[in-house]
Image 1: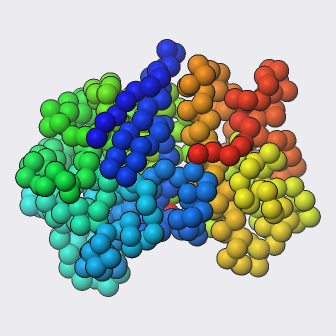
Image 2 (image 1 turned 30 degrees about the horizontal axis):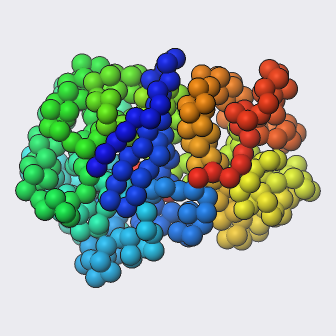
Length: 409
C-alpha cells in the first residue's frame, strides 16, 4: 500500500490524497457507500460504478451470519460473489458488539453472542475477525475492537480501551504471520469515548503497532455533534500525516465537510440509502421529504442542475407518486440520487482542495445547508443562493455535475 498526500489546505487540516490498493487507486477525501450484506441497498454494481463509487463497505458480522463464509469462499471471495471489481473495506464486527448489547458477553478472548437472525450461539475474536475478512477477500480490513456506549463512565471507557488495545495487538500479530500476498491492508481503530487523554493514548499506541491506516471509532453513538467533532480533534493530531484516516459511520453532508477540514480522508454512512427508503432526498440546500403533498405536481427534478440519472429523467411529482404507491422504483431513484449527491460532494471537495479554494467552499456549503428544506423553498439550482449572494461563478458553489455500520444501509 502507498498513500500519497497530493495537496494540503493551509487554512485547515484538509488534504487531497491518493490511496493505492491491490484493486486500484482511491482518490481522497472519499465516501464509501455502505453495502452491509453484500449489496448497497437498491443499487447494482453497474449503477455504483456509473455514479463514481471508488470503494464500498461490507460487514463481516452480517456476511458471517448470512450467507456464511463457506458460500462466499465457494465463489472465491466477496468481489466475485457480488459482481464488484473495485476495492472493498470491511468492518470487523466490533460495532455489532456495541449494538447487540443484550445478546453478547465480552471476555478477554473475544465476544460470545447470539445471532440476531436465529439465536444460534456465535463467537468472534480478533484472530477470527481477521481470518474472516481475509476469506472475504477484502482490500481493507478493520481490527476487532469494542465500541463503548455513550454516555460512558471513565472507568468503563478505560477498561474497554485497554481490552481494545490488546485485541489490536493480537490483530497485528495475526497480520505479521499472514501471507503478505493474501492479507488485506489493516486499519487500527482509535477509541477512548469522550475522554481526550484516552483518545491520545489510543492513537499513540496504535501508531506504535504500525498499521496501514487508522480510523476514529466510537463516534456517532448518540453523543451530541460537538462531542463528535471533539473526538475527531482529539484523535487526528496523533495519527501519521502520511497514512489515511477514516471516520467510521459518519455523517451528514456538512459534518463530512467539517471533518475533512479536521484531517479526515475516508467516510461511510447509511444515511443516503436509509433516508432514500423513507422518501428523503439530499440537496445542496438540505433534505427534501418527497412524500410531502406540495410535490405531487412538481415537474422539477429532485435537484435542478444535478446530472444523476434520476434527475436527468424523472420529476419530483412522479417520484412522489412512486413512494406513496410503495413502488420499488421510487426508493431506487432516490437512492441513486442520494449516493450521487454524496459522491459528487466528495468530488467537489477534492476539486476545491486542488484549486486552493477549500475554505471558501467549506464556508458556503455549511452556511447554505439546512437539515430540512420546505417544499416552497426547494426551487433554486444547487448552490444558486450562494452565487446570488457573493457573486461567485458557481464552479465551486455546489453545481452538481458528473462525478467520479453496523446497521444495514
